[in-house]
Image (cartoon, rainbow, N blue to C red):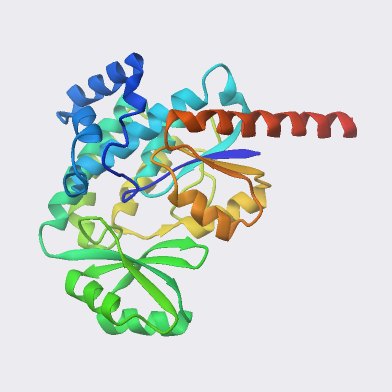
Length: 317
C-alpha cells in the first residue's frame, strides 16, 4: 500500500513553483487560486526570495497550492485508485484534505490562506521561534526545554523533535544544545502548534465551520494522534485545533507501519517527510516529488506496488 504525504511549513524554497508553472493548465489553476485569496502565488513561487516566502501568510497557501498541483499530476489517468491513503504534516493536512476529497481544492487554498494570515498575526504579537532538535538523551533534552520554557511542537519521529517558544530561548538552546544533540533553527515566523497560536484558532474556527466539507474518499490519518479519520468535519475541526496543539507525525508513521504501508510518495515541495520516513520507517521505498521530472519515478512506484499486490492476490486465490 502506497501512501501520499504532504509537507509542512519550512519546506518552501525560492522558485519552487517554476517548473510546475511551465504547464499552461497549472498556470491557469494557480492564477484562479491567486484571485480567490488575493495573493499572487505564481509570483511568490517563482520570483520571491527566501525571506519573503518565510512569511507565514505566503508560505502556507504556496505549499498547499504546490501539493495540490503535484497530486493532480500524480493521480491523473486513474492512478488515484492505486493510492492506499494520504496524510499531511501540519499545514500539509490541508493539502491532504484536498486530495482526500474532504475539501474542494479551491476551498482548501482559501481556508489555509486564512490560517496563514491568522498565524502570522499571532506570531507578530511577541517574538517566538521554532527549532529542530536531533538526537540527545531524551531526559536531558526535556530538562533543557523545561529550563528555557520551551515545549515540543512537532513530534516527528526518527529522532527529531521540533520545539517552540520565546525567540530568545530558542537562541539560547541553539547556542548551548543538550549533550549529543543538534539544534537547527527553522525558517518559520513563530511558535506554531503552541499556546502562542490561541488567537489564530479563534479566527480560523468560524471560517472552517462555514466551509463545505465531505467525508474522505481516501483513507486519511490525523496529526492529532496518528489515527485514521473517516468523518470529514471531524478532520477539519482537528486541523483547526492543531494550530495551537502539537503535531504527532511519529504517531502517523506508526499507523503507516501498522497498516502495512509499502511505499511513501511526498508531494512538492518534497524532501522533509521522506527524510523522516528513511529513519522512522527504515527500508520503506520513498519518492520525493520536487519537480515534474520526479513524477515518472513516483508513478512507477505506484504501478509496481499495484502489480505486486495483484500478484499476491492471485497467488492466494
